[in-house]
Amino acid sequence: MDVRLSAEQQALREAAARLVDDHAAGSVADLDDAGRAAGLDAALAGAGWRELRVADPDAGNRPLASAVEAAIVAEELGRGPADTAFLGPTLATELRRRAGAEPAAALETVLLRPDLSGLVVLEDERARCSGVAIDARGATAALALVRSGHGHELVGVPVTGASPGRDLTRPAAAVEEAPAGRIPAAGPLTAEDIEAWSAFALALTCADLVGTMRGAVDLARAYAGVRRQYEALIGTFQSVQHMLADAFVSVEGSSSVTRHAAWAADALPSGEALAAAAVAKAYCARAARDVCETAVQVHGGIGMTWECLAHVHLRRALMSAQLLGDVGANLARVAAHHKIGGGHDGLR
Image (cartoon, rainbow, N blue to C red; front, side, top):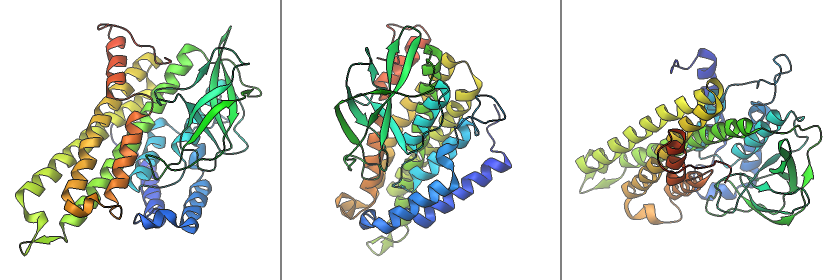
């Protein structure tokens, strides 16, 4: 793979960065600004970035944009941190495309199991759905799967009442015993389809973690450049410099492994792509907590207060680290791919 971004991809990164810089919350108080949040939603919708993985009408069922390009947007939104829905709607779009269904008429997301480890999979279409609709701001429905004789069918459940929880920037909605309805014109999804979707979903989640880490480091570095102790900037203290340098190395390592996972999602067979994405998720999830906690520590006492934005980055990182499996679950995926020890089924 060529790790360099093309000119078009670099332009996409710059456009996403401008959108975040113009509209994302600059303080915890800004998260309560409904007008600002509406402007951010409108800007993202106007850019069309939630539809990056819609099927290209001139290229069969191939998406309009690559997984690398979707990851670029996810990273910049994580850096914000941007309180607008992108991860959930993009994963729903990817599911629809792989099932051959038409794009959704309204915003929707995906329904994960209560522990967030994977998609909800029903044994029978008459069963009722329970789970967590992630990144559900503005979503009216969430997608899940039901087993069928030909693989898995796509179903949708209604979503209401999304509210902030652990992650203040991406409200989730609890779904309890909701009726599921078949998605019109959707065909069966094979095991390979679901592996490929899982690889893309993990890569996109890793990109969000990279962005969240990068934003936390930027925040801490800026604070270290203005906060004084003992008549000196704390950024001149060797201990603070070492902490920020270690955090920077973790971010760059996470960025590299995530870029490979995003490339693999389109370029490699589904099993290999899932293994690459699992490696990336295990690496990024472990790094993200350390990096974001470092950002809190650099802020000192104020980092422990509600007013400091550092905890918003940490909370987002903790949420993303759990999505589609934590460190242990993804190391188990890697071990299963290489036939080391016991196996792990990504659908379980």
